[in-house]
Structure formats: C-alpha cells, structure tokens
Length: 339
View 1 (cartoon, rainbow, N blue to C red):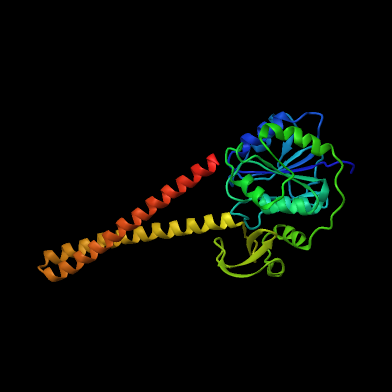
View 2: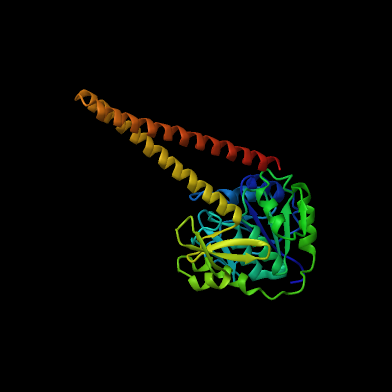
C-alpha cells in the first residue's frame, strides 16, 4: 500500500460521544479501514447505528471469519473480542483482558501484527489502562500511536496511562484529531518492521479462545506470587519496556492500574461479607442472651451480651472502613475527571 489506511480506536467511559464527534468531523473524501473497541455491556449494542449516523463511514458488527471490509468501521460486538488475521475479522469470546470483553489491547495487538506500519492506533476517553499495552504494540510494529489529550477527555485515565508508557506520535484535543488523522492516513507508511516475538505470541492468545495456553504465557513472562482475580490461577509478570503487566495461563490479562482496582474491589467485597457475618452474629448473640435471661441464667446472659457487644463494635469498625473507602474512591474519580 502507498499510504496508511488502517485506523484502530479504543474508548471506554465517555467514548461514545467522543467517537461520534470524531467521525462526524472526518472529511467524507478520506477513507480508511477502521476497527473500534468501545467498552459496552454484554448483551446488546446499537453502536454501529450511532457511528453510521455520524456520517463518515458505515459501521457494523463483523461475523467471525468475515473478510475485512475496506472503507468500513468494524465495531467489536458485545461480550466478544474483535481481532483480525489474514484479511479476516475474528470474533472471539475468550478470557477478559483488563476485566473487559471486548478489550482494546487484543484488537491493537492483532492490528499491529496484521498491518504493521500501515496502522494508526488511537486511544480516546476512558478510565484505567486498557489500550496502553496494545498501543505499545502498534508503535513497536511500526505504526503510529495517538491519544486524545487527557485534559480534553471526559475521563482522562486511559489516554493518560497510554502517554506515560508509550512514546506517542500525537496528543491532541478531540477537535484537532480529524485533521491529524487526515494527514496520517494520507502519508506513506514507514518501513516494514519485523514483528517482535512477544507481540506475535500474545496476539495469538485470544484467538485460541478457551484453550489453555500455559506455554504461550510462560514464554512471554516470568512467574510471580500473585493470583489472578478472575480465576485464582498464578499470574506471570510481563516486562513490556517500562510497563509491567500480568497474565494468567488461561488468558486473563491486566495492566497495573486495572490489577490494583481488581484488588481494591476484592478487598471491598471481603469487607461486605465480614460486615454481614458480624451483623448476623450480633443478632444471634442478642437472641441467645435474651433466651438465657428468660431461663434465669444471668452468667450465661452476660457472656452472650459481651459477645454481642464485641460483634457490634466490629460492625461499626467495618462500616467506618467502607465509608472511608467510598470517600477515597469518590475523591479518586473526581481527581481523574479533573486531571
């Protein structure tokens, strides 16, 4: 090809508005083959209709094995990863990456391997760090890496994390991205770059869907003492330049920010379970103390009352911990939104 003609876009919170505005501003005489992952729910998506109405290119959910359509927007279907190989779209319901399916990283790696310097990767509004590793793969395979300016994004987490780990070729507010994309899509691609072995291996993992791939995982990482939040298996550490990532042998993968958030949620869930258990204990101990009093056993009543009071003190402590966690989470979300 004599120009770049592949555009891969990843978005999450705030992404639908960003995608629609971006495509509405693209010149109608500029075309590309476009792939989009927007984090969506697991049941139904009208995103192709919304993106088609933006007026740039028609959008659709591809079927597994369907040939890639030049001049169309390929949108990842709900609850499935979107990949590309040998000129065909692959739709796979494999392990979640960064707790998402569809996830951005698998698409970007796939595009990087398939198209190399013909590809442009773009990260828009979103939270946490899905897309960072995938954008690194696009860059390492000779493509261009772009992000929406975090200060312009409704949710700056994803573009900010990508900028911290990837030497991006452009960072711009949404209003400036159409002009940058037009220039990039009209340029000749850079020289071909051999696909790094680790990227090629990781790109194959989601293609295999439900097959265990411990040999693939072992070849791209080294064992750690951490456990996978999704399946409980051992995680390996993947050293990806400045980025330290984690992956288990069945395919779950995490960036550091996403893994930390998974741990926070696990801790909160454990605290809620402990709260419910101690509330039940307090109720039971009070009932037993009442029963002992009715039967004239003051010593037994006193013992059960002390146990109830201890359980109630624990309940109060756990409620305070949950309240502080909620305040810290709200503060972090506000800071991210204002960053």
